[in-house]
Image (cartoon, rainbow, N blue to C red; front, side):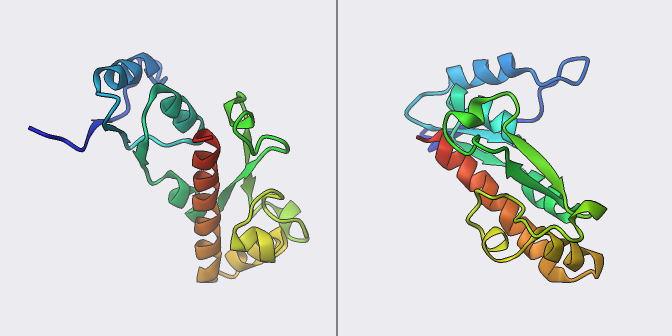
Amino acid sequence: GRFDGYGFGGWPLDGDGNMRYDILKAAADAMPDTKVKYAMGLGRPEEIVKLVDMGYTLFDCVIPTREARHQRLYAFKPGMDNAQGVHADSFYNFVYILDDKHCRDDRPVDESCDCELCRRYPRAYLHHLFKVGDSQAYELATTHNLRFYARLMEFLRK
C-alpha cells in the first residue's frame, strides 16, 4: 500500500515520567525520509525542537490552546526568537497573565511577536479581559500561542 506519511503516537515515557527520545528517534529513523513523519499528540515547544531535528514534520496537540485557556502565554526569551535561539536549553518563558504584576504592565506579552495581541494591546489589557471574563481574552491568548508555535516552526525550518 501507499501512504502519504507515517505517524507515531503516544507519550513514550520511562519509569520516571521522562520522554523516551530514543524510541521516538528509532521510529523516525524507520520511516522513509520521502514521507511525512507525524508525531501524534506531542507538542511542548522543547519537544518540537527535538522532534524536528529527528525528522518529524507534522504535529498535533492541545497544548497551545489549553495553555491559553489557563492564562499561560508563551514568549520567546530576548534574542531567542531565531533558528539558533530555539535550540538553546531554555528559549521561552510563560507569561502568567493573571499575575497581579501585569495589571498595569504596558508591555506586549512578547516584544518580538507580530500577532494582533502583541501589536495592539498591553499585558494589562489582557489581564483585565481575563479578570472580567471577556471571551476576547481567550481568543487573543489562543491566537498568540498559536502564532508562537507558527514562529517556532518557521525558525526550525530555516
